[in-house]
Length: 187
Image (cartoon, rainbow, N blue to C red; front, side, top):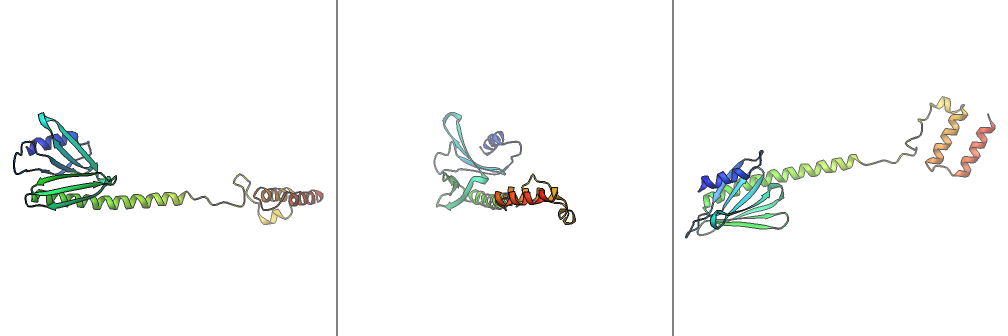
């Protein structure tokens, strides 16, 4: 039964996915079509066997797992998975030893995903910080300012400077017109 279920699990695994552990339900009475769980390096998969060889596959990618709980009962154990969306899936009557192993693997994967989410959040914050735009007083398409020695004597440079100041909103139109007229008179 385990070999058959494992073969089916491997058929639905992606090329980069490998099964880590599998646990099969052992009901005390009538254990003809037991359910199973398969833990892979990418997801948590529930196998629900149905009549006439049909099967339901319910999976949750580790990144979307909120938590996994285990409860040991008198006969077997119950594993409960809660997704970040709030969806809950559980499987009961797992042998206690298998359930403990499922729980341990699930906890290890949860820890990896917590670290992955933290790294991803930090990367997103770093990218958002790199996109901050600082407003400059000089328009981005304006020419660079000349050296101070030239700006004092060249009227064209002076006109460019006051135009940049007007475009940046540092002076009003009236002041710009006055300074422009003054510079043109000296030419």
